[in-house]
Image (cartoon, rainbow over the protein chains, first blue to last red):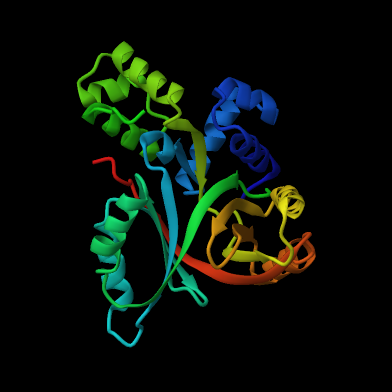
Length: 151
Length: 152
């Protein structure tokens, strides 16, 4: 489905999403017309879903980020759906992932400081349904954050 | 910079959803002139709230069917071993995210692969051979949602 030109365009786009289309076209070795048509086609095929701004929550005053790993009580019917629906209602939850493995669900939770985190943890997290076990990993630093794939 | 008003917060949320929108279009949506919207976006960038853009691709359609979250514990610690590990792990193209964490593990990695066989290759040849790697735990991603966060 993807040919070398598509791959080249996506590779350049991933590497530097901030450049204008004219620069991107030049780097990928195509005309701006071709670039536009290719991106449009990739968009229609659902491969290219758009560009999103990255938010630095620390700059917004959210200094604490915790990765919470949950094991759910799977004997309860609808445990996953209930848990996920309730987790979506917590504004401080920025990511929700489900897994195959020891961990069932992971939530990324942000807070202004440790006191605020403790509030959220007690009033919004521990009250989520069907929790069997929770492990917390406190985020210290992001060493790499790429969102890119080796195309 | 925590003194954002409602419009700033809505601008941030709108750009996190679609960063290709022009200042003119955002302005019309939130009742601002094009220059006023542009100035607010500039200010949010300068304050480090908006730190750039990321491309959202459907990895499965690109042939990357497997994403694994790996918790890694270092066998030996100390400043030098952390730096060695971080330098080596950052250079692996299949590793998208590296986070230093406190808790059960020392690092949290997000790894993409074509399939489970490919993941096994990355794990054995590239990750298990990293300097200082001790215990690790792999969880295969089934679904993922990014939420808007506390912007409303």
